[in-house]
Amino acid sequence: MKRDRFDRELLIEYLGAFGIRPDEPEAFGTGRLLAGEPTTGRSISSAALRSELGIV
Image (tube, rainbow, N blue to C red; front, side, top):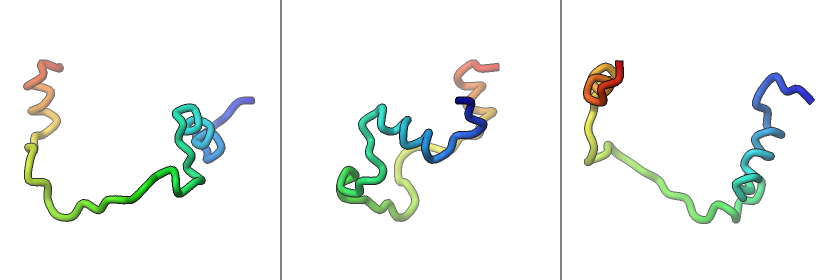
């Protein structure tokens, strides 16, 4: 069967291969909310990152 797009049925099958059950809320446990700006890390442009990594 040829598929023209990544539909919900294919997503469920794909997730199931990793043991993820998206239709079972208890499978996800408790949620987390991240609020505010991150306090670690850095901002860098894609061009600067490519240069830093030596990617042309």
